[in-house]
Length: 195
Image 1 (cartoon, rainbow, N blue to C red):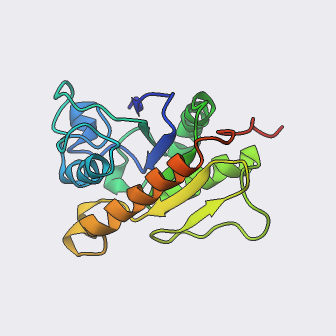
Image 2 (image 1 turned 60 degrees about the vertical axis):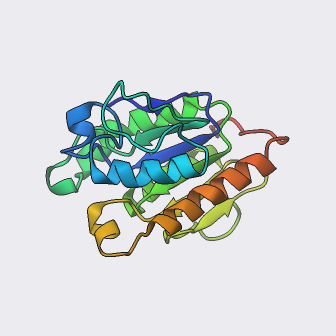
């Protein structure tokens, strides 16, 4: 599944994997299912998307200063990727991070995406001193001069139907991302990957 959005964007959104009935069917991340509708609404309301809906490729949706990728790029059985799938897709996620030359921040959707993003941050020396950040909705981490990492619960039906993740909660995450990006517009976007 290809990334959706421009590598020139300042925000990278990392999801888990293509949804079996959404992205896997439509060929575009977070498109054609309720998770995509839920996410796209928050992106539109915070200025990261030009329209509210994400129904199919060619529907006119354009991400604005954002790019969406996934920790795993194929729909895993039972929505639970195996270690081999992470290893097989790890090079793609690394290449995505490497291509994002203007990167100011990452929003990780769910604990698995958060851990995958954290591995990328660790490999590049982008983590602040002290203990590694822990996943939790709204968890935020930034080392001086490096992109931020911001966590959200995944907009899966399991989370949205139960109220674990509400539209207001997801909008607050992307509002924070927008504020951080705008506040950091004058400083270096990122450092090169550590060797």
